Amino acid sequence: MHNFYVPPFKVLFFAVMLVFTGFSARALQQKDVPIPKFDFHIASSTDEPVIENEAEIERPNLTWSKVQIQTNGADRKYGNIISMQVVLRVEDFAKTEWWNERIEELMLAGKTANIYDRKTIIIFPEHIGTGLIFLDEKEAVFSNDNWKSAMETFVSKHKADIAPFLEFSSKPQAKWEAAFRFQSQKMATAYQQTFAKLARDYKVPILAGSIILPSPKVVRGELVIDPKGPLYNVSVPFSADGKVMDPLIRKTLITQEEDLILSAGEVNQDRTWIVPGWKVAVFIGTEVFNPLLYEKLRGRPLDGLVSPAFSFANLDKERIKPYINDDSFLTFSDPDIWEKFGLTKNIKTTRAVESVQVFLKGNFFEEKAAGRTYNVRDFINYDAATSEVEPQILNLYF
Image (cartoon, rainbow, N blue to C red; front, side, top):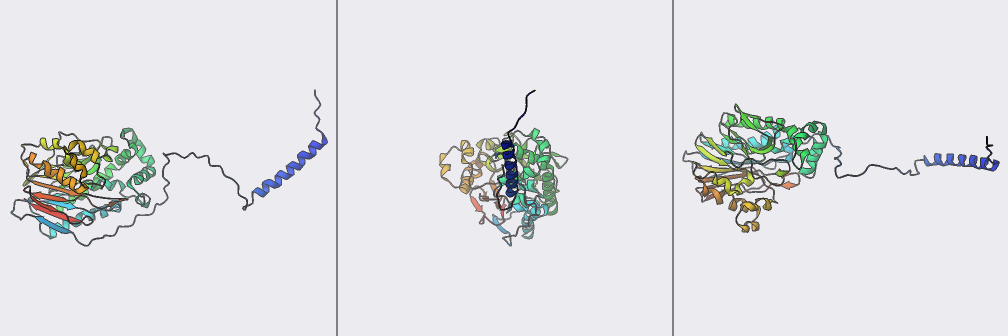
């Protein structure tokens, strides 16, 4: 067994150091002495936004006091197509009643002006129901600078609820796709109840713009969805008694933004909406640029072509370029492209004589909706909305 020997001077040195470090540690605990902190969190592009503001959203103020009505043609008792240029702010989607009010203010204006009869049909804009994904959300969502960050905030808030729907999502933005599936029943219910009631109350058939829903179909006059099915941008017609009608039109030429979560509809689908006094073909937004869709209507009995539409100023020209056999369109501005290369260019392929395109207006986070609501009677009598920021009704008599 070895002897364990420590020299006395080393024992003394150890004791001194022990006392010294004890005082040092106590000194470092003083508030005026900064102590470094080490954050081992590694920043990532997939970090979720921090949800800080759960305050209720404030009701948005109106910036207009009336709805202007413009008329193209005279009432010959043959019927009329009415375009409803709705103005929405993203906050209007927070409450069903706020969203409903923005829509019904135009319906009431039309009734007051006595422009509805038994051969009237009403057309609302594309994506009028899509913002209902944010129904009942708080300030945390609506205070975002852009719609993409708003979607990320929504996804983060509802992460647990959205998770079960991820297995059915395969598009580039699977989280957003799953978010729409999660909210789809709430969206469909608000959308159907609103437009069914308006159709019944005002006794007119309504093409209710469009909404993003998973695999929608009509079952005994009701709108039914399958949250596991593909998402579509779908236009839903309502009869004057408030029933959902066939055909449901699923957008075939989807935009770059829509392609992140949506599937395209079938080119061969039925797109003719038939109501008393009218047979009209429905084109959703950018579909108006595809000549093949008009060819499929050649020779069929039609009175008009109608298009619920939505556009931002930065129209995705590359997406529609393959469908326009005229490179000069690249030099035109947004509203002129729709009018020169859409319905009015292709209508004579069909037997229709009237064309109508109505755009949703308003500010959606940082982006302002573009496009110009217009109609053309008998190919040559043109009328267009005079305001980009106020609700308007364009009335075309057949």
